[in-house]
Amino acid sequence: SQTIHQWPATLVQPVGSPLSLECTVEGTSNPNLYWYRQAAGRGLQLLFYSVGIGQISSEVPQNLSASRPQDRQFILSSKKLLLSDSGFYLCAWSTRLTEAFFGQGTRLTVV
Amino acid sequence: KNQVEQSPQSLIILEGKNCTLQCNYTVSPFSNLRWYKQDTGRGPVSLTIMTFSENTKSNGRYTATLDADTKQSSLHITASQLSDSASYICVVSGGTGGFKTIFGAGTRLFVKA
Image 1 (spheres, rainbow over the protein chains, first blue to last red):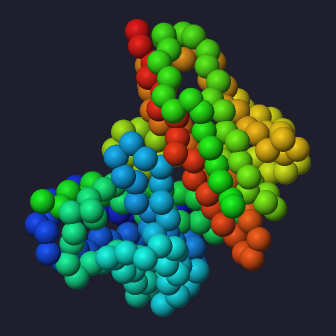
Image 2 (cartoon, rainbow over the protein chains, first blue to last red):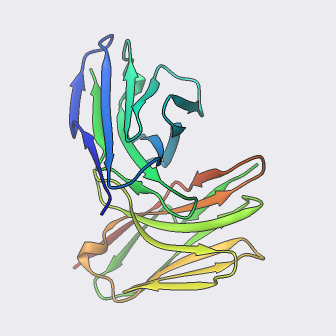
């Protein structure tokens, strides 16, 4: 069966510090991978998606970047966090349009 | 512009009662519509998936309907339980020029004893 791992679950970081959130998928090959952000009380916003190793598409300009060094690994990064980067970050994977599976999320608080 | 709008924004019901959540969309061309349940601080979990040819689908006490002509969907919850308290998110995929997945802002459901 397929599983998705996302860590850490919670993170408190000072403004200006770097960020690295990691997501890995097991039990499938060549998945589409996604990073979403959810601000408090708001809907999900797609940040990045990847259809293959080294292929990253950005949906909105921001202070974040994404990388896919391996087929089932997706990393969300920042060189210098801003207060506005606080939120709930979700990784997801899919192999077709009709389904998407989400990780448990990372609660990021920038202080 | 591709959009997904959900209503109501929030809803409070008593345990055991039924409720219906609404989702209107303008995504075109349409590929599929999904309803997710998201517990606070957790990732969304899929409840139902419907394509153009399907107009109703059930998953236990959850029943989703789809009217592709009017571009409306509803999620009906029967005999609500305290554990149904969560956000319910409508997600529509489709759009021109490649696939797009648009998330609604969700309906926050509170079930009280």
